[in-house]
Length: 373
Image (cartoon, rainbow, N blue to C red; front, side):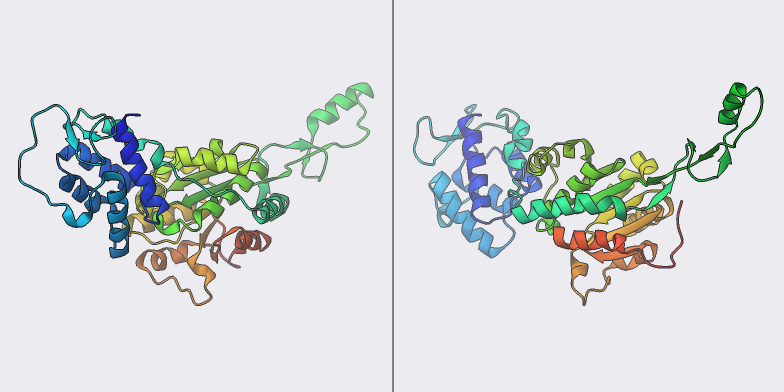
């Protein structure tokens, strides 16, 4: 990593450590702005950062302090000038002095910053799972098998309940008794767990809850023979294989390198539609859990259409929302009020404790609603 990139990434780390939310999409916009504008003065660099990283007055004060710490210039002194940038191939931006430590930003296309947009600072760091969290995961692993809905296997097995005469077994036995049928043999379709499909919202509004949602997904993958997990924010990411590791914290660390839209925007409708376009067969006859606050941005038409189709495909469609943990909660937003009739249950789940309660309630299916197969 060059000196330029190291200082820019250090600045982004400093903002995050100081409490400013700088998710991957904001970092990408900041670096793209530098690549496009090739700032030749401290003022230009300051305003690229302020325009892409700051969303509130308190964040602006922190931004000024961190900018001064990394680049040696206060916010009040930064002024965007109309002077053309020097024609040199690389321009030194005054900072903590000249020399090897000076920040150098090249012209558009020549700095290599485009490749750094998905750099290590786009990775979200998850806190270590607490002892209480580990205990709850163990309890979930114990109680999930009994809570999952079941269906009859498509394959017949010998023995068990008398559902179908096993002619092959009767014939083979009769050969040993010279054609005499001494007893009847039976075949049956044993019960099996339905597939479990988790669609987990990792957008910025879910930042407080998505770590425990992902820990719950880890328990599901570790316990259920047929489990699939996807995350969505502004894109759809399949993470089932990433969760198949022995340790939950190792799984979350691996997820942080795969889920690049964490803590960003929300596009529930388009991402659910992308799932249906590519993986609709996974939802057929499955227990489908959508873990999201349901706060869709813009037009909700795509969200409503996608949820309706999921409801028709799934055996059971349950929506877990942290907002529903409040007893006074009512699904009054445009998106949630429109999709509520298509849900088997809308349950308040915001952490592992409430997830365990929902599992013990067998996912709180609404009595009397029809079964979709």
